Length: 90
Image (cartoon, rainbow, N blue to C red; front, side, top):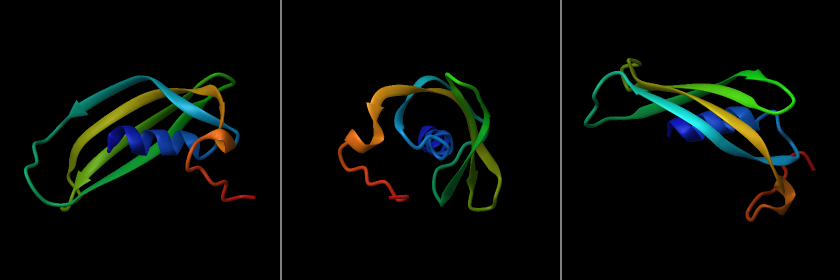
């Protein structure tokens, strides 16, 4: 959930290439055993070679239960060549 939210935050600005996770650090800040969880990812930095995203997961009371940060890079594979991908812009 953390990795997906961070990846989608980074991928929201990359329209041509598939992104790969090169580093991902997770912090579990509060235990949870049941209930709904919500992940929110945000792209916090990008340059010509990498994207850095942060993600926070909240429980149904909006208390933070985990957070993470990830570094992503472009793959040589184009999104259009990825199985199941459909470009929403075309």
